[in-house]
Amino acid sequence: LTMSLPTTITIAFLVLAGLILPSAHSLSNNSKPNFQDIVSKMRADLPQPKQASPSVSSSNVDYASPPSCVAQEARSLNLFSTTPLIYSAPLSRLCHPHPVYLKLDLLQPSGSFKDRGMAHLCTTVQKMHNSASNSDTTDRMKVISSSGGNAGLAVTTVARNIPQMDVSVIVPETTKPLVVEKLRSLGAEVTIHGKNWNAADALARQWVDDAKKSGGGAVYVSPYDNPLLWTGHSTVIDEIITQLLEQSFDQATTQTNNMKIGAVLASVGGGGLLCGILEGVERNYHGSNEIRSNLVRGTKVVACETEGAASFAASFNSDNGSIVCLDGIHSIATSLGATSVTPAVIQRSRRHRDRGEISSSGDDVMSYVCTDGEAVQGCVQFASDHRMLVEPACGASLAPLYSDRLRAKLLDQLNDNEDSVIVVEVCGGSGVNLDLLRGWKESFLEK
Image (cartoon, rainbow, N blue to C red; front, top):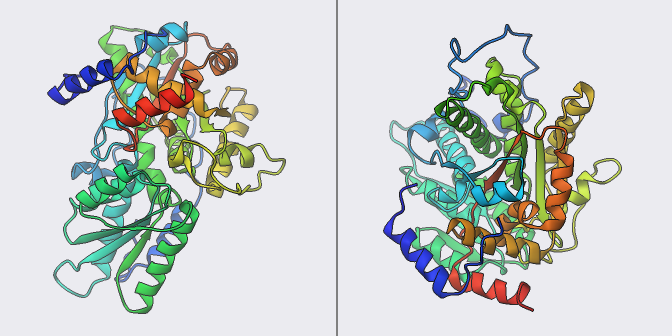
């Protein structure tokens, strides 16, 4: 990455602040499509497995081309970015013999991965809204979202680049003032309501219902529970596969057919990102390109949470996979603050795990829960190693590599494929600055 002046200044501040640590090593043809009906149809299962295909090689396959139809309109409008995938020397030393790569979705325009899903959702609902209108011109529409911050920032960042789209965001009382000010500066109408995200979400849904009763054109936008969001998020896997293969051929590697993604690590709040990652893995696994399919065959998806916000772990580890609702969020990682996950993420996780058991390929979903201190350690050490800031919700996905306790567990579970690579989805988050990071370090690491 070319280092910009702001990045250089950030490095200087990190040093001065004492935060740098020594390196630890199809829409229907109906003229008035119904949004809920279309969303319901999209909840159908992903395509059935492909038929056996002939063997392929780098000489006769466009190995780097991802499925081109996924979120194509949002990508063509530059509503989200293809973010860098970088090799991490410090983390690769810690996780030897597994090379570690970082997918830098903190570099999305809003600061987090959520731009992917919001871009695909907003372009789709606008298309449906325009198709339902009897006017020759585009009618103004409003999207109403509930968010702990990052989803609201994403939908606002995306919507401001879509003509005739307004945004209202309802955030809980736990949302950092820094995020609220960012939302307002981007043009969102912001309302602070409720002790947690669930209360804010209830008000958002009520506002949409009230608008519909009065003939308004408001659309509810969930921070995580919508198939359109998941499909948008799934593009991260398409990019990771393409970028790994490109780097492999750039290095004159002839063993591309043997390259494997051993693990993808991602933070889990309500489950939207994890749904997208599993959708992307499954789409490429069942795709027609054997090289791309082989790369994700046997991949373990690591769902990362903090103690006090581990709603995925509670449901995934239950005997029958029933959804468990936490009594509240008791963690510094407030962006993971959904007291329950979408049922779809449990269904998709179990399907991925079951496929690995049936085929003996090694596919699995593993739940990792770290302490707040380990999440903060991940943020601080990541800043030291890579000169970038992330919030504790993202630090949870770095903790399995930086924490001695969790890293030993992960490497043991990857010992069946020692040459496989580890990829961390650095999801980002805007609830962080130097003062906050210094405070977290003092509270959790310097007691």
